[in-house]
Image (tube, rainbow, N blue to C red; front, side, top):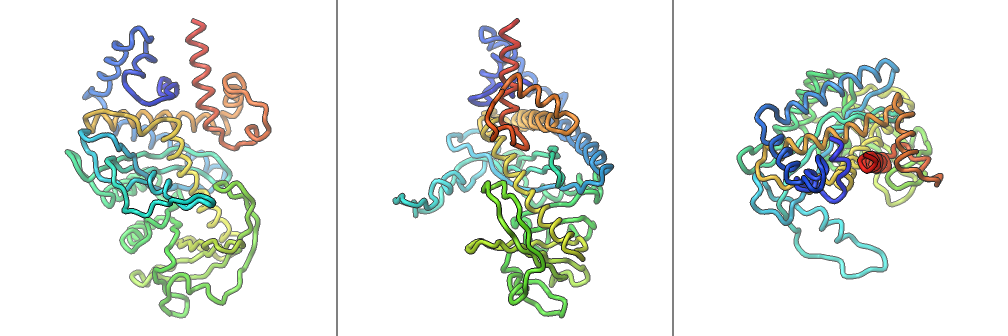
Amino acid sequence: MLWLIRSTSGLLLSELGAYILSPMQAPAGTKRLSNLLRSAKWSAEHVREYLYKRGTAYVEKSLQSNRTMLLIWDTSQIEKPESQQLEGLTSLVCQKMRRLARFRLRFSGVYKGPQVNVPGYRWAGLLLCNLSGGQQLWDFSWWSNRGAHPTWFIRLRWKLLKDVRKHLGNQVLHVFDRGFAGKPWLTLLCQGQDRFVIRWPKGYHLIDAKGRLKKTYQHSIGKKAMSSRKYWDKKNKEWKRNRILYMPVRHPELPDVLLYLVISRPLKKGRQPWYLLTNEIVDSKAKAWEIVGAYQKRWQIEMTFRFAKSELAIESPRLWKWENRMKFLAIVALVYDFLCTLLQPENFKLARKILRLGCHRTGNKLKNVSLPMYRLRQACFNLIIINQNSG
């Protein structure tokens, strides 16, 4: 697993083969790695079950400290714009092109053409974390609606939800973005009595306490905020002040289920409020702020995707067969889980020592980072290089 931490340019079998043995014996190392991935004695499901066991233990340990455990769901995609023959490739809207086409002040020539589609496959991630810090990987899943193993996200997320219920029950609070909002998914969560927080689209309809059907944004018109608080926005690296408002609501298709709508209004003009729908009982300002704080933690899964793409080079594997590729990506998930383990509170001393020996920095900015995942990977890489060169 450590040779994946060492990779800096990509997850190429020929390069990793040189790390397993030596650069002079790279073909032999590549052969060993290929035999491992083609072996019928194991599959990606074995790695998934291992992650489930570790995640279950992490939740049980955190609940002993009376911490609210969050399970953050989100989706991404792995783009392979130069690949054509890999098994299981599907058509994706190029997110990189969308980012490059954004309007930027003092620059002209914004792209206004049609969307660009590229080959690739889709990716779902589930991350365990708590409100006080720390995180643990629960699952990485990849799927495609083409090839020898076609599937769809509706089936995949139902399978993931059943696995969570089997191992964790209702001990975690599920956190979803607007992509999961809708009657089918909300019905599944309510039927299984799962605890959840969903960012609800402002144009969807909800029923208020007086039985009136309104669009989500209309429930807050003319109502004053109940509380205001200042918080640190990790995404934009700045302090912000938000105001909250909460009220009981019901879904038109689920009139017997009592839900609560928590509205987080940014003080700065031009920013859209958050409409958070939950089945948690929100009867106080403190509980409403806890719901807002839970959704703010959703940015952790975005940073996980970014780290896996930039530092673990998860977009670079070029294996022909789908099963072999899933095994290889499962090993990458193990590497990320290993780095998360080093950042657990009981391993802080070990992590500090690794950073001190392998990637020492004197700046206060880097010393105050809560989760120095990038430095930790670089420190492990440097220590392995030093250990190998020293014999």
